[in-house]
Image (tube, rainbow, N blue to C red):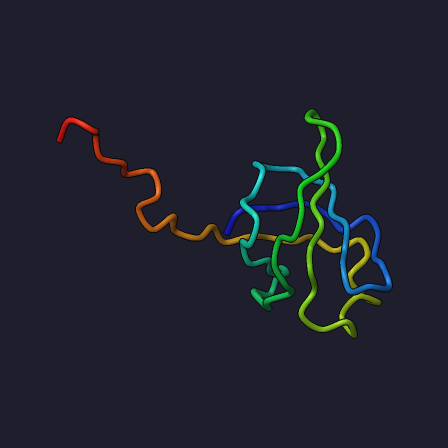
Length: 90
């Protein structure tokens, strides 16, 4: 698991805003807390390039109340061969 960041704000629409501390995740990566409980998935990456923010779509809105200030982690998904392109001459 890679460290994603700390939750800065939560919204009423079921999303949490995380201040990024590590590498920029891909959209759709699953987000977990420190106990490996699934919180949701990465919805958006926005803000300045030097310190981007991550919007996390939370699976259960009841979790949002106790989420502020917590550390979140991600597990990167496999790309399923998207980077493996054939040469046109093959």
